[in-house]
Length: 421
Ligand code: GDP
Ligand code: IMO
Ligand code: MG
Image (cartoon, rainbow, N blue to C red):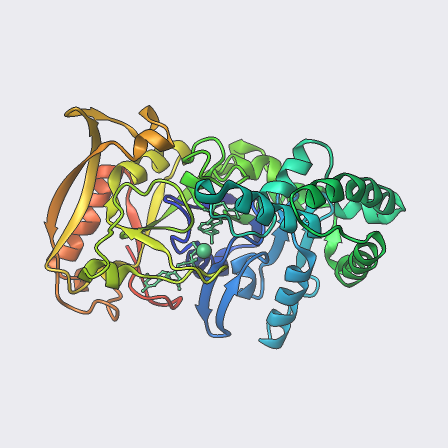
């Protein structure tokens, strides 16, 4: 049996979806344990191209069971749309996809409040995905949440009534429009009826799987530096993203998680506000043009930067990464020289990421090194030997800095555009 976690070692969008889809064939269970539909995981395989927000990206492997743990927050309409999208693509999930009844529901007021808070913060806004993530987790830990299990009786109605009394006051005070109880109630009862076949207690599923020595793949959403505690607070997301979150978020005892794959982009991207120390602001530069991406969830343009080895090194330590899956190496092709941040300093004295907060991080001196690039298109390479020497050196440099092996290298967005070492 093995329990493997796939985590992003930067600020999200490292290519976790592709990695999970690639590995899922060997797995009995693929599970989400944190975050919600703020995640956008891209999968390109024989079924088509997908931007997945809630269903685990490993669902395309027909013998794999997909789980959404109680640590995930769910916008039911998004989940319904996603199930429909998979059905249309010919991916049958019936009898092999389960959602924990403990998962909290994203309600309309969470999305409204997310937007109102962002607007009230003005220039200091977080740049959230406005999917209601901060407000729904705030309700969860302040005992104001609504879960799938509440639909089993009229608890749902009474909790909704109470919440609307509270939330409408805040919404109206902030200039928004009050929600109508009956409209929200009817919509959510409708969602429940549609999703009911998938909702269950996952305790027995997970515990029996562990007992039967099954293989689990845990799919993190967001990345290490969006973690509420260890990320660049307050420019973070509202869930714990490091692998320990899978323990509470799915019900897996920590001792079972023996492999942690750190998905690492060959450069760095970030969506939303907050420090990105190696950010490239020369919008005419070749690197900026090459690294540009559109966010899978919101369609925003991602900020881009050079690879930051201090960030990767810290993620490896924090999340207990045992091996790295390096993504988007193909994008670096054609650069004569590549900048890499080897570490941080203050007044010439070397420091670590953990020594400064988010505001201090914007001020640190970056110790850059310049490495030689390569001109060849590497997207057809399927073995390490086929890579140009400088691309091989780039991979080895990451291994040396992170002190863990790079076991997979992405050379394109499609599932098979992957080098296994
Ligand atoms: P996730 O949120 O971590 O799953 O990552 P996203 O899907 O949001 O963003 C990663 C982007 O990089 C997507 O557009 C992927 O299709 C793409 N991608 C992933 N791996 C590779 C790779 O090795 N090469 C290239 N060119 N694109 C990749
Ligand atoms: P995946 O799983 C990148 C960012 C938002 C914002 C901050 C808080 O696709 O890697 P939130 O809506 O969570 O309250 O926003 O977190 N963020 C992500 N950035 N990838 C993600 O997910 C993200 N999920 C949230 O842009 O800065
Ligand atoms: Mg993403």
